[in-house]
Amino acid sequence: MATEAATQPIKLRWGELDEDDGEDLDFLLPPKQVNGPDENGIKKVIEYKFNEEGNKVKIITTTRIRKLANARLSKRAVERRSWPKFGDAVHEDVGSRLTMVSTEEIILERPRGPGAKQEEATAAGDSLTQIGKAGAVLMVCRTCGKKGDHWTSKCPYKDLAQPSEGFVDKPPAEATTTAANTTKGAYVPPSMRAGAERSGTEMRRRNEENSVRVTNLSEDTREPDLLELFRPFGHVSRVYVAIDQKTGISRGFGFVNFVNREDGERAINKLNGYGYDNLILRVEWAAPRSN
Amino acid sequence: MRPILMKGHERPLTFLKYNRDGDLLFSCAKDHTPTVWFADNGERLGTYRGHNGAVWCCDVSRDSSLLITGSADQTAKLWDVKKGTQLYTFNFDSPTRSVDFGVGDKLAVITTDPFMGLPSAIQVKRIARDPIDQAGESVLVLKGPQGRINRAVWGPLNKTIISAGEDKVVRIWDSETGKLIKESDKETGHQKPITSLSKSIDGTHFITGSLDKSAKLWDTRTLTLLKTYMTERPVNAVTMSPLLDHVVLGGGQDASAVTTTDHRAGKFEAKFYDKILQEEIGGVKGHFGPINALAFNPDGRSFASGGEDGYVRLHHFDPDYFNIKI
Image (cartoon, rainbow over all chains, first blue to last red; front, side):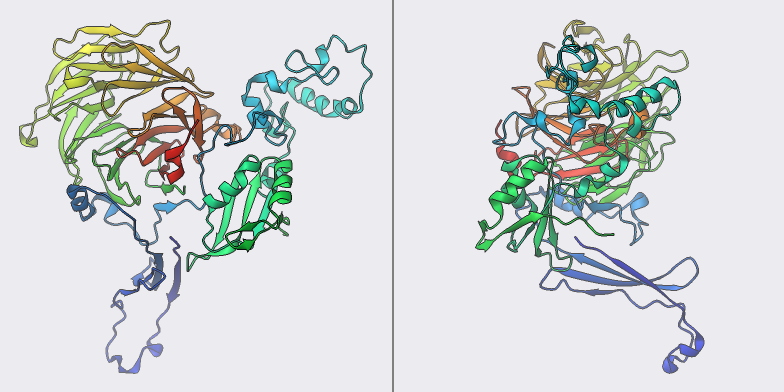
């Protein structure tokens, strides 16, 4: 449902009033107009009312009407449908949007995608899920490479192994976190806390990270279809199909975000040039938004 | 699926309830006005004005004409569902936590919190057919459990009352004599306060959710522990699908810790589990705070969740939900 409310205060001056008015009709509001629903199911309601300053305001509400398929309701439920509103719902403003349809497609996220192997722990980007899964996965000794047994600093083979390069670039980060921990009681922002490696800007960018653009989609392709198409490649965090607000028809392109970049890479390799619904898909990395 | 977001409440949600036909959804929140919504498109039908405190619980009669609400203003009120008018007010000496109509809608069980030295209690009220004849006396008062009783519901044929609360024990009472019939085992039972309790559609079993990060499935008659569902966060709300063998758990970390963590880390998801295999099926994200209330539409094709964020989210399942295989 696409709705928009355009408000424009109209200041009426006596000099601008129509000549044939004869009398001051300023206090009268033009009647409510209902246009449509047209063939696209778009209904336009034009209403007028006075706002707090006493100015006349024109409110255009555009709604798309859809017929619900096979709605089975009991007789009583149908009757309840026509019950008059009561309580606060009576004086509900036209503009108050109490009920909205989520702009985001929410999916029932499976712990393991169908067909995906149990190698979820390799998810490099999603350190949060790893933290949730006990320390076992997180606890990897960088000296001997043993998993879940001990931390690097407690490694029994510490003296035997030569310090690797991966180890050298780590200490600065650890130094800052320990420094933050010593000042007991002081607030430590989550990004500075031990274990937090991603900065705030990085988090914000997540929405655009590992984003794959899919173009040349057919008109009937919806988000669930796209999800079905891309899910075999790995964990999908978001699917989006651009839809024309007025007509409700797909604009022929969409975005898919992967949790892991490698999965996105594989999807691009596999699906670029893939025939889908009589059209040849074009799949590529989405260019970062320029601003 | 694209959930419908309903922003009618200004405070955290506390309870959600569908009527029997599944066309109306009642929501209670810590603001003082329970609200009724059309369950198909989320349109607000009306509000029930009159309470003077957080509303903790509600129940609707089978014919969807009578609504009962329990509130922290130490009252439980009966309402005309259609007009939104108050029909009767039960006055108590402490906040009411949970309300439940019995089979036939002639009895209601109401729990009251411990307050100013008074212990918590389970009270049974007779509900008159005509609100004019309504009386305020309790038919039965049950006392004994320590701490808050978070939920009390009727057992089969109104013969028993099942209660659960802060003292971690699930109890079954005789609703005639008020005697304690059964008590859940300390060993197998919950380790932390029980926050929610929900019966299956046929009443043969029920599920309890607890702050010990688990939910447990119990037999209604024998109080034997059938299943345990383990999760990662405290459970605030539980419900069961009337259609498929699915249970849904809602929760999240404490509200006090919400602002200091990323919402992805908070696990504010409604988690679906297979009822029999106890295996996780999936999660539905969306809330910006812990989930406080969950309700399944009686047709099993949609469910609603209410969060600490003040939103009710109404989810109509995609067709592929119905052929999920583990």
